Image (tube, rainbow, N blue to C red):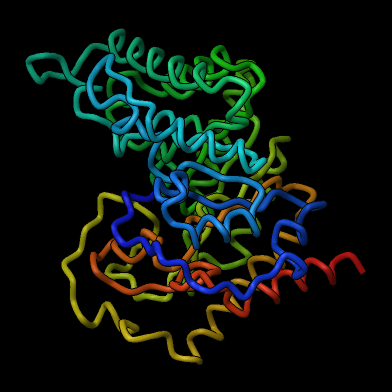
Length: 371
């Protein structure tokens, strides 16, 4: 989901964690994978403090930006695997469950993908062939190494209708089944996922449910639904999120909580979601915590995180992975979306890569659940 991260902390901050202290991955090892999105500074080892947190706390990684089509194939037929190779190597060296993100997405796709040499939309047949070539080339390169793929990302509007992306307007609904088919052919053993945001909207939930049922009826392999966890302090409600989680689990697929973060900042419009094309002009009133998060808001954020993790633990039999969208607050796309230049506090580790107090409380929740 996230756009390229601009603010990245590469400090070698002091860590309070020691090898003997409990970690997130240890606390959840018998429940579900606990993952994180990495950027190229992590994969290359440049952000040493971030790498230390990843190794200590997480057992799964997902590519935040380096596997998106504009990076992988900026020009037709010219593939650049420099960053994705680095990402996969990092995951293998650290024994991570590696997730590729994302094969087909309307955003962060190169312009050439949809047009001919005259700038006109290509035919259905041409776009299908381009999809197949892109998916087959990328997935087969990492066959047996990348364990799961976000095959299609954000194909629905919040009202449950199809997003009128170029994939949809040129190919139609069939592009979904074709994408999963091509990915499965390239690596039959890889897990294949559908991923989307604001899945607690009932209409959107039902649209995705119908799509998955249609795939299953056709015998198309789909292993999991990724519920993006981009949340605000008041959206979604825990009840609404749980209702959608149960609806997806009823399809006999895994449920994954993906791209999890919680913004404390005011949203500039009444609509929530995570539509990356949104861009709102900076206003000081939209950046109320530039000098630090007040204690009362920090406590509310902590309570919100704990409520979500209580839900995840309640349904651990249905959830296979929970992935944070970034390592530390300084890495987060939330600082620049939908308003550039804000200061947000959406993750579990602060700008010095120190664990927030909520980390220990989440670990205790997991321990208490065993009793």
